[in-house]
Image (cartoon, rainbow, N blue to C red):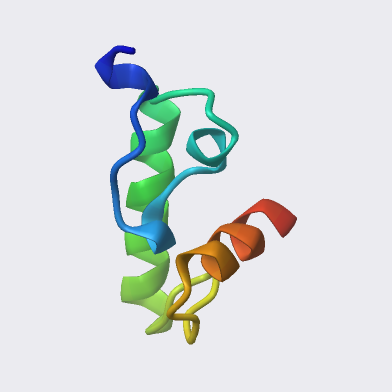
Length: 64
């Protein structure tokens, strides 16, 4: 296993490809940046804002 296939991060900011086990790429960085920008502009997270269980957050990300 190499570093591009490990899973680490805050659930609300994780890109869908990480949840599917596809590993990291620049698109994962863009995803996280977009989530941050959404949060700054809208005042909340785009997926599972009120969820504490990471699995529910992952499900919300995958559904979109």
